[in-house]
Figure 1: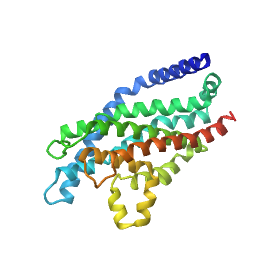
Figure 2: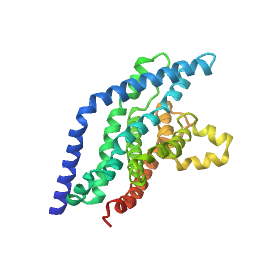
Figure 3: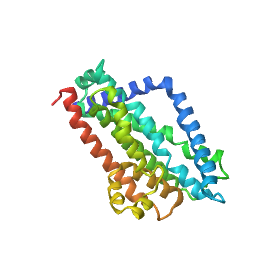
Figure 4: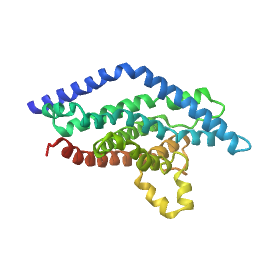
Length: 265
């Protein structure tokens, strides 16, 4: 019990340390990710793309186009936060100090949880802001808000674990371009950012099966289902547990590599 209390106290101290370190950029992040991005993506997806693709713009279809863009927002933010671990492993190695006062596994979990919670908070205004600015083009009237919030939380946590894994797998910071060209690009392209799951399944049975290995599809499909309630998209009750399952798998994979990088076998 004493060891548990000590670990929990240190875990919270590291959370507080990350919160303190992030304060300087918090307002900038809110401005960029919670205001600028929903306006830019809303105008691009719900206004220009809606007019370009449909003779008579359909607010629900515009909303679906807009909804998938959250994948890029969360990818960019969790990448920005968690790739710092790669630079730390290359340089000052603050993480070496952390694993002397807290279980290495809990150090990894703390990084995933902090960025996941941070990304979740940043993403919360995304749909309300988009709906408010472009209320004639984005239809949120059918939205199940509790489901939407839970999917955003699970998706934020999952992509945080994904980028922690990326940070410990990449050998050096010069490999970051490879991450985006070989992994993150595919994660977006086949994660419902542009094309929904039903379309991929309709036109390619092979791709329609492989795409279930992409955690991004559960984020975008879950959000589209929560916003529209349509059976065209994967159910919330499938997407939410799958995002947590992927979080566990990605965390486990990151832990294996993290032990090797920090020599804490």
